[in-house]
Length: 215
Image (cartoon, rainbow, N blue to C red; front, side, top):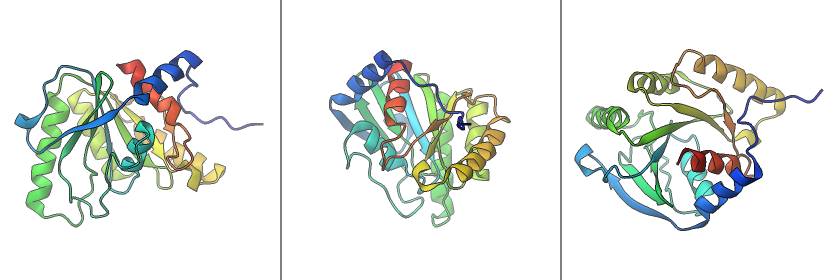
C-alpha cells in the first residue's frame, strides 16, 4: 500500500500555471531593513520565510524565484539581522534571518528578537509565514518558540519541510509525525505541510501556487 504524506494537496493545473507565471518574471531585491521605520510601504500582500540557521532557507527562496544568487546564505548564525524584501509581481517575498544565535552577541540577539516580534505583530499586509523545518530533524524547541510567537501575533503560518531528498521514506514519516505533533499545539498553524527539496525541485511548483493563491 502506497504511503501518503500529509502534504499540501496537489494544486490544479491552472493554479500551478498561475504560480509559475508569478515567478517567471523578474524577482528583485528591494531593501534590507534593520528597524521598523525602514519597512517599505504596506501597499501589497506579503509572505515571509522563517527558519533556524542552516535550514536551507536561502536555497529554497532561490529555487522558488529561479535565481541562484538572490538570497545569500551565511554559515554564521546571527551574522545577518536584516529583514530582506524582494518584489515578485505584485507581492513582497520577505526573508527573515535564520533564528538560532549560538555565536551572536547577546545585544545582537535581543535587538533582532525585538525587530522580529514587532514585524510579525505589526505588519497588517503579512498574510502568511512559511516556517521552514529541516526534514532530517523535525520540529525543535526553537521552532516551537517561533510558532508560539506567531500564535500570539495571530499570523497564520505554514510549515515547509526542507531537504526531504536527504531522507528515506521511513525516516521522513517519523520526522513528519514529530512535526505534526508540534503543530497540533499551535492554533495559528495552517493544517497542511509542504514537502520540498531545493536540490531536486520537489515541492517548488506547489509552493509557488500557494503563494500565488494568497496574493
